[in-house]
Image (cartoon, rainbow over all chains, first blue to last red; front, side, top):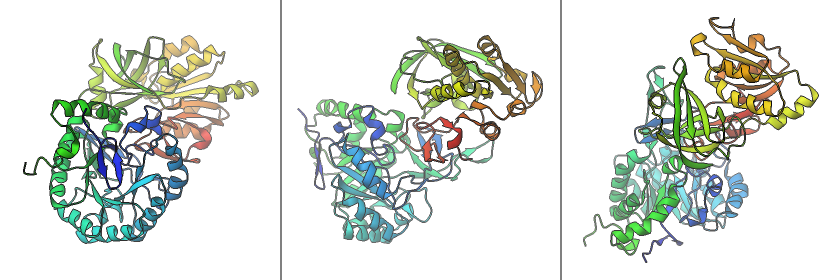
Amino acid sequence: MVNTEVYISGLMLENPIIPASGTFGYGREFAELYDINILGSIALKGTTMKRRYGNEGPRIAECERGMLNSIGLQNPGVDAVTDEEIPALSEVFTKKVIANVCGFSIEEYALCAEKISRSDKVGIIEVNISCPNVSGGGMAFGTSPEAAGEVTKAVKAVSKKPVYMKLSPNVTDIAAIAKACEKAGADGLSLINTLAGMRVDIKKRKPVLTNKSGGLSGPAIFPIALKMVHDTAKAVNIPVMGIGGISRASEVLEMIMAGAHAVQIGTANLIDPWVCRKIIEELPALMERSGIDDLDGIRGAAWKKQ
Amino acid sequence: MKQQDYEVIENRLIAKNTYEMKLMGNTGEIKRPGQFINLEVKGFFLKRPFSICYRTREYICIVYKIAGGGTEAMSSMAVGEKLSVLCPLGNGYDMEDCCSLLLRKSSSLLIAGGGTGTAPLYGLAKEMLKKGIKPKVILGFGSKDEVFYEENFRDIASDVTVVTEDGSLGEKGLVTDIMSGDEYVFACGPTSMLKAVWEKSAGGQFGFESRMGCGFGACMGCSCKTTGGSKRICREGPILKREEILW
């Protein structure tokens, strides 16, 4: 029997499979499809202090092996999340969740994180300093080591739970940002968020997305995400959650060999709502075929000296 | 909602750039006319949403117009090809709502279709017929060569009017030109048509189209603002009641 358990910041996960923020809502839609208790954990939809509608549509554009989204952090606001969404999820999901928070000022990040971290259901706070679809917030805090460090410090000062900073790939040196977060006290890192991208409608001669640009996700970005996880995991001594284009068990193992502690599955959920269950079912058999007894034994194998 | 393989058993041109496709597979879970499916087209990343035109015990019928690469690829799909389909999706038309209205006032029930939006209304009309409801039908198209299902509607409804924008078939004009204004309308069509019908109607249910990521409520890609807060076209829609709609 192989062991798929992984340990991240106080949470022992049955397996490293976590649906990524923004692709799983607050879990309810998926709980109708399968028993979501098989998941390692769930990263909730990005939450802000106030309710947000997000950007005007169209906010989805298709790409080769991927898609662009410009949702713009639609969410019901932190109070509705703590009072309604999390209790509703608790009825169908018994494990701890990862609460994803976002803001438009350092104060908002801290307020939102403090509030949501009070929930017993929340095991980890994931701080989104990498949303490419809002102006004056999100990614603005994730593209310089200084700003990323400041948000980390402010959230760490008030959060009652471990803090993971979710990093943007739209930077020159992601490892430098990662190190700044680590230095400021981050307990872990989640990466990558989407890559900024665009499509033009040739009939209208205008961008497909009303927001003009959006974030690219899906299998097309997997190799980029993998390299960034590799570069970051080598540079820091805190756990890294690998995210970006994963849609099969073999890619989970690639991410862990690149140095990830756990992984998040995003866009693949939109294409196949049962994909996380499939990966969880496939993983032990693939580990067995690959001669892997436990995931801790292969973490960072791609760069660690054997 | 289930994800299953359906087999193409018919795929034929029925009007200019417009095809009717019949997909054999499970139809038992479809609850209401106006629900839709999300269909995988090989070589394209996202599934494509299509409203269910009608269903039988054996197959689902959809009508689509070539609008881009995905529908272009669909038009050359051969009988026997298998497609992965998410079905059923969305809320569909609420006929209970219309039944209670009918008890009070049966003369003002209208089905108003525009272009390929006509398709789900055919299934609705069939279901209504089973319940003994006979709505008036107005179908609007750009021109004669785009018209489809006129005969199908005439077979099941007694009062069918077809209008075309260029006057090449039936009366020249728009669906709203022959609405009286006091109707409860079951509408589906382009947004501009829906808005015009909405303005001229007393009540009703309107079928919307949207670019979607997932089709089942996870990505929030198709959200729209309504009087009851934001709603997802794929989940709380695609049919919205007249009083919910904000333009």
